[in-house]
Image (cartoon, rainbow, N blue to C red; front, top):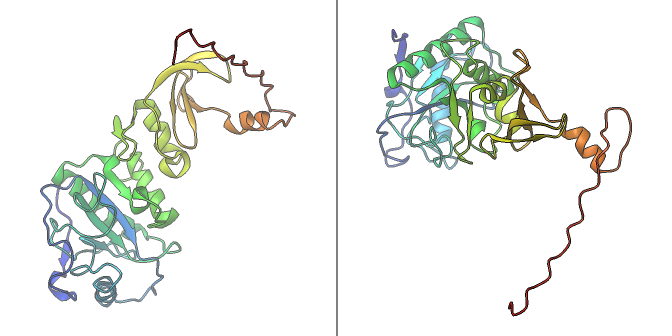
Length: 286
């Protein structure tokens, strides 16, 4: 993979020696996308912009050594800038998961949720992702939006969707992974379940996987099927169907409506749960 053109601005940004982690990465395992949450004018000077953001981030907000991003991509023309040593451990996201502070390369697209990449801007971002992934052997599912790691909305819906499209292999050199282990729950999404999860919104829509795949009776058709439970959805495998219908979601809304006593078209009729009788204690039991 050929390295894209990168402009080195490390010596032109404000610094605060003694701040930041001061530590180095052994090997990066993920790429994390960020934005500024600030809208910039189309004629904004990139160096001035980066200097301003660096000054802000070495203040009380992050107490970082300099700008808390390894690379910055201009949303207008796709120019790539290197702002920090690639192996610097930066304070840009949670450190408790793979691809976080200790093992993640931080990539920044200045702007807010209304900022849109031009075709050239998108090409620059994709070229950087593809090159860094090839350089460090990083799988496509380890390209992540900042919001993946916690409650932050960064980098907004628009840029997060670009990450998910890259994960799905729709743009850039990304390919759909065979399996990915969630860093918080430790559960693995794989194959058809993973493809459906990514294609239909990933973490934002389904939440994190709470179980591994298991076999059980699918409530909608009373058939034994492979299933997997996420925070906001239950996924079922339908091998008799053709793509993209081999994985479907349980009708959670209809089921919940029935549990609340609502009736009407589309709302199933639920049988009453069995009454559990208490077991009699054995004689002599304490």
